[in-house]
Image 1 (tube, helix red, strand yellow):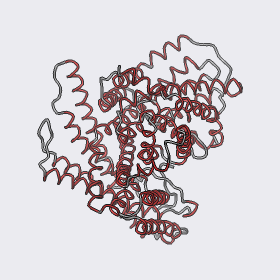
Image 2: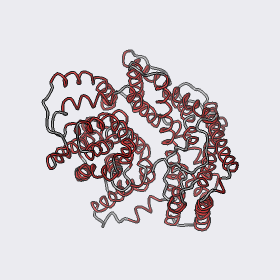
Image 3: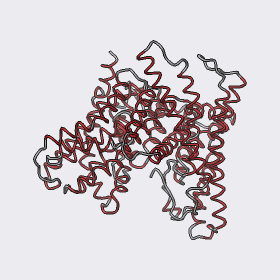
Image 4: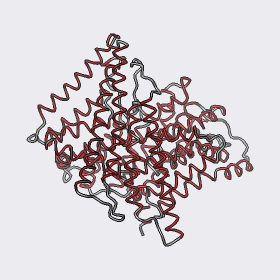
Length: 639
């Protein structure tokens, strides 16, 4: 659902010079971010141990980050790994070559448009002689360099798209069965989008008409495999141009691209992702699971409990549901299979436990949510801790209930080995230290989010370097994987912000409030309806995209009812993560299936997640009924 490909697409070489160039850009960008992390840690040490600090580091980081992040985008587009959905295969057929060729050109043009917007930002900085406040450095050349990097990436993506078109013509892809059927669906959808927009949307159209057309056109573009971030940017900027003029649309694009690329808080995302990759190569997931299994494995269902606890612990390191599921699927499933656990329980506890990766801080989605609603990331991380621990507890109780009701799904208890438990605990010191430094620094107010990510990524890198078998190959693979995931997140973030700007100019906030009478309708009913909406959305939509697209509309309702936006962020995250294991399209279930292969049917995994789904619904009810579960800790830490 997040990344679609086509079995019948024209053959495009995996390792042409264009892709190599984009890899070099991505590697240089991530190494640049690591150097920024080094500077940040040096500053932390200086201000902790001495009365000095690195002067102007914050504004320097913003300038360097903009250049580094600009280099991440090209590889994502060239590899066709932007987050997208394939919802029209039944209509367009299996041969998706025409659809992909059209999407390639659209993606290249949007990336070029982003580069142009950044170039205009550099031009404005030069015209107004913009300088940093502390050091007095001119910013124009930094924006210009970032624009040049993004333009090079856009040129590479365009060349790859043109190469794909040339190959399709040379191989006469247009003569293959189903080519013109898919082309008709793609072109028909685009033509329908254009007709709806030009006919119904202008400056005089009501907010309801503008909103309805915007979401309809957005859905149509996403349905024909236009990447979600690209579709959001096209609709947002296009509708701004139709209602406010092309100049306003360009200005908004310029501001949003520049704001996203230079955001120090957003820079924590690639650093946290890289921390998770280094931690994986260092074997920290294995350390966590071995320690948990040594203490709990002798009990009936103990390995399943250890897997849940391990997912929670590793999720606190990597911050990603999918990464947690994939990692523990490899680490824990084989061991449970060897110990004669029911395969449904073995796969189900890992698929469900993987959702803890986004609930327990640091959470990538929670960072993005806070940036959208302008809330403190540090406070949100504090608020997420107790709900995350509650989720772990509920999953442990779900395992206990499952093995109590059906004892045959787990092997009989064995004798407990105190020596093994003691040894494994000592061997698990690395994840404990990493967890304590990153979250302890955040909760204790010692670090900002970006500083915590910097400390975490360098410590995880140190663990990886000292791990046997970690070489340049693994280091490079970690950087490239991070570049692909972080680049896709940035594309969605920029697109969603442009789309949100259109909604703001169209006064969608008032529209949302006018649709619901907060004075007469019970607030619990509104919250229940929103919960059902997010549960359904989470089953078919990417988590990050779901949060970004809906939050600008939903947040005014939450504020209007007098609720805390940080609490609602935790609720929203819980809802969409529950969708990750909800039939028929629970993403974590499909990830688990890809790990275990054909020997385990999807139905078996869905059967295995049912006890955890019930636990999730109970936890969600508690969280919505008692907001203090999320809000008590931030209030306590703030004094």
